[in-house]
Image (cartoon, rainbow, N blue to C red):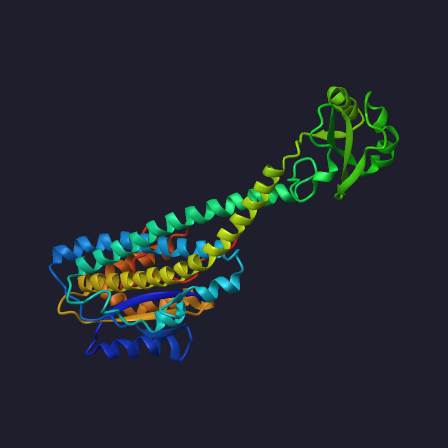
Length: 382
C-alpha cells in the first residue's frame, strides 16, 4: 500500500499525548494503520494575512510539484523501456526508497533554511522544480528525436521486401553497372509464384537477357529477384510483370547512398547509447530532488493549515498514517470520532455526506483535522 495520510491534531497537554492517543486508537487493538511521527521544524509563522494567501499558493505548488515528480518518473519508465523492476529501483529519494524517505522524513535545513520566511521557502521550491521541469522538456525532446529517427531507420530494415532498406541485401555484383543499353531491375515475387517467374520472366517483354534472373533474398511471403534487360524495354516489362503479380521495385544501385544509410544508422545507434547513461543519471538525481521538494511542500501545507486552524502559539503534532487497505473506511470513521470536537461544521458536513448517497466531498476533502494525501504510486504502466 503506497498511500499515506498526513494529518495533524493540536497538542493536548503535550504533543506526545496527542500521538499516544492516535496510536492507541488506530493500531493497538484494531491495526487500522501503521503510524509515524512526521517531524516539522520550528518554521517562521509570519502574519495571519500571509498565511491565508500562502495556503492557496501552496495548494497550487503541491499539484505542480506532484505533476513534475510524475513526469520525471514516467519518462524514466519510457527511457528504461517500461521494465517495472528497473524503474522502481531507480526511483529513490536521498538514496532510499520512497516509503522509507517519507516515514523517516527529516527537514533539509541546507536546501530550505528555516530562518527564511515561509514565502521564501515556497519560492525556492518553485524555482528549483520549474528548472527541473524545463530541463526535462529539453532533454526529453532531444532524446525522443534521436530515438524516433533511429526507429524509423530500423523500421525500414524490417519491413516487407517492397519497402525495406536494401543496404544490407544487395551487392554491387548483382547489377549491370555503367552500361548505356542494359539495366538490372529488382522484382518482388510471391513465394507461391517462384516457378511461374522462372518460366516466364524472359518472355514478359522483348529484350530480356536470357538466364539473367537470380534470387538474392527472401522473407516469409516473397523473394527478391534480379533481372537484366534493355533500358528501352523497362516500362513494358514493368507493366506485364504487374499483371502477373510480380512487382518491380523502384531502386537505383548507388554505393554512396547505401553507405550513407548504413553510417546514419550506426551514428544514431551510437548517439543513443552515449546519451542513455547520462540521461538516466540525470533522471535519477532530479527525480530525487523533485520528490524531496514535494514532501517539503506537504510539510509546509500541514504547518500553515495547522496554525490557521488550531491558532497560536504553534502547538500541534503532525502524524503520518499508512492505512491498512481493507480498513480505510473504518480508519476514517475512527479519526472523525477522535477529532470531531475540533470542528463541528466539518463533522456536520461528513455526517451529511454519509447520509446522502452520491454526495461527493471530493471538491476538497475536508475533515475536522488537517489532512493531506501522499500517493507514492507514481507510474502508469501502459
